[in-house]
Image (cartoon, rainbow, N blue to C red; front, side, top):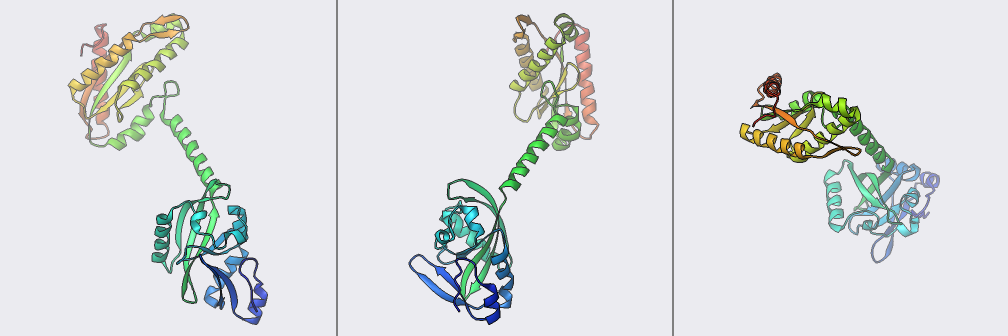
Length: 329
């Protein structure tokens, strides 16, 4: 009895009569009909082929063309089963010939185990979608084929992206100052110090001069504006890898890894100059703002060392404030 594997095969008749099942093998030039005796070792794959709701594809290793697809492939790729039969897999794999060859090689090296991978496939309309692929080499009449199980994981990927975005938002809220967008103390002590380890760092502790007077004269909304723009100015002047942390009400801690005291002094003067010349505008009112600095350098030998460096910078800042002038650095 002849059964054509381009649609639904009559499993019950095949199992009852135990006759050879014939499958369509399509290559580039012609269609061959080759008998396949269903063996016990193939029963597992047989069940998958005809009962799964996911796409199943059988590809000839030599021609890299499709010799079998199940009905689920029509929905996944937009082609009919007849259109898919004989099609090179590069038509719906988002991969060139070299990538397909690499994929085949990996599947064959993994034999007799399954080869798991993720990839991008192409719908007939041209849109890409993410898939999970489980592939395995099978032998039929001493000829090699790849049996491939394909599951669309687009929704799964979208959920992962949404989760990453949510985690980013939560992390941002946890480690960023809500007003200025700079880092906060939690980031400094919970994340950053664990990353840098034993490293030479420079600290600049910045304080906005007469900030209380700004709040009293112009209002707290104007004070918030000054804080936001000071944070922006500092971030625009530092290098990647440097960190700005809102350390207190009107204090910013600037961490500059691997800097000498001379380099810290230069950075502080640059920031002072830019802030003092910046036009802080609250509606039509211009607010003049200056800042003072304290600084410290050292190597973080232990977790408490950063507290000691901050204390040194704070003492220097206090002395600067006490003399009622900006730091001469």
